[in-house]
Image (tube, rainbow, N blue to C red; front, side, top):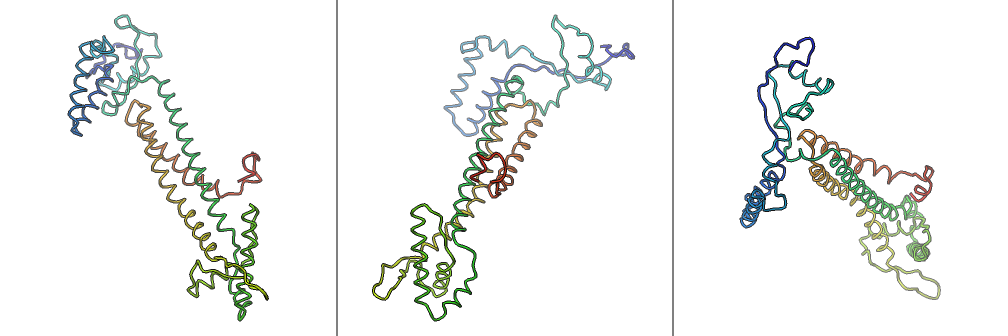
Amino acid sequence: MGFDPDNKDEPIKIAQITFAYNNSKIINWLQTRGTYVKTEKWPKVDEINATILKEIKGEGKDKNLLNKLQTPCSVFATFESEEGYNRAKKYNELPQLKFCGQELDLQEASEPTDIIWENRHFKPITRSFKRLIVYIVIVLMLAGSAAIIYRFTMISLGAKLKYPKVQCSIFDKEYTGRSSAYENDAVAEFNVNNGYSKAGKPTHFTGVMQCFCAAQKLADAETDQLYYKTTDTEKANGEPICQQYSSDKLKSTVYGQSIAFIIIAINIVLKTVIIKGITWVGEDTCSEQLASITNGVFVAQFFNTGILLLLVNGNLTEHPPKFITKSI
């Protein structure tokens, strides 16, 4: 070859030459056929056999398919020495030589076992366009995950923060021997805040109702039991105040705990979509494909598991952009 000026007379021997063909179609057909054989879908096997035979005979869409399958589109050469490898790497820096009237373009090749042969016909711009589509799908899925987590978090916190943190022992001590007054005040607090809630206004529980219900639970009272506010002249309709309190506590717990399972489910879906998406992109080698899948799954699941929870639970009202964070 004689590209190295210092060793131009030293011959370079090639150990092996392997031709590559534009045979992605036939490879995909054979892979599909193998799947049908594995799943014992024999009518499908006969159908794809007929398709392959028809295309090879030139009776299909591509009349020149057989010639394309037999025409090499690239050559993989293995040199016997390191010198040959180094000269080939520098070849493109030197004036171009021609072989059979065609300019040669030498590129460093991967190991033959690492190459995904059926993907070699994809152009870089095609892969870039497919990657963009995969990235958009992942971003949309993460946005949907953020919306679900945010909604569930707000529902859980809304039910939880509806009642203040208080020491019920103080209320129990204050109402010792005054059970009727305890019930009256609890029902009154429920009625007032229930009206606020129906009107869409913020509630203002002080702790009387929740501590009363906690005491009733210790006394093994039913959660749907009716409680009354009495006066000197009348008894009003009963209210199941503890049922509402228990329902809010259950809602807070269920929605709060559901977030963990939602994140796990979305992570599984993300992993599946990313694997399918990167496979669809059609990387040249198994190494590139595995690296893209690993990086994509790690970044997406890390963002979904860690970053989203921080953003959802953080107080961002004082940070820009205000038109987004003012309601978070």
